[in-house]
Length: 66
Ligand SMILES: [Zn+2]
Image 1 (cartoon, rainbow, N blue to C red):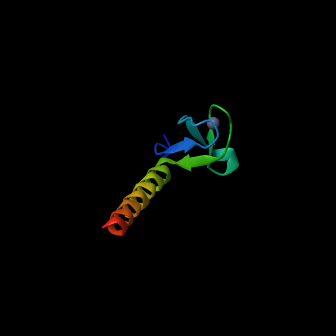
Image 2 (image 1 turned 60 degrees about the horizontal axis):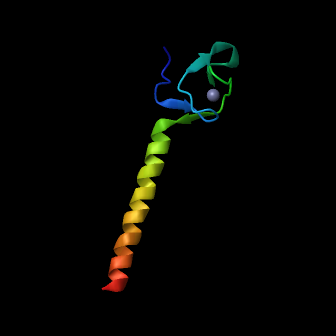
């Protein structure tokens, strides 16, 4: 197994990915054959960043009111 556990297909969202040696080890989706792969950790950090921004906005909102 390749180290593709934390990756998902950016097209269909499938986690069934395979590293194709004929494409130079490029990771492709088994379901739709797409090579557009997203990393789950990027999605998670994006959500964290969004949450962080929300908290900052909430604090600024409180400061403005008080
Ligand atoms: Zn796919």
